[in-house]
Image (cartoon, rainbow, N blue to C red; front, top):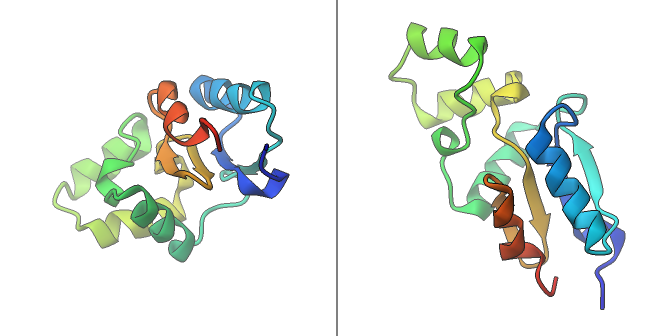
Length: 123
């Protein structure tokens, strides 16, 4: 039995090829996920902290290290705490690696995209 539409959520960046591929794979598997474009509807601190907890990861582990913004922030203060990175990720959602997928089987950062299988199979 396939889950209801609201049982799978993808935190998606439509400009990211990996995110687009993961979204396509979810749909090809027969699911109609809730798609959250987190650049247009940014994470709240509580929401992002909850996702990190569900994945068993720290903010620094989902920090997108590509791009000028990360370079500027890391150069200015490479010793930032996890709480400081979390606050910056809420202020600048482009700093969050993507996509993050939430299903009844768990929450995972789908990077590489093959990680989707961990939470999608028999969801």
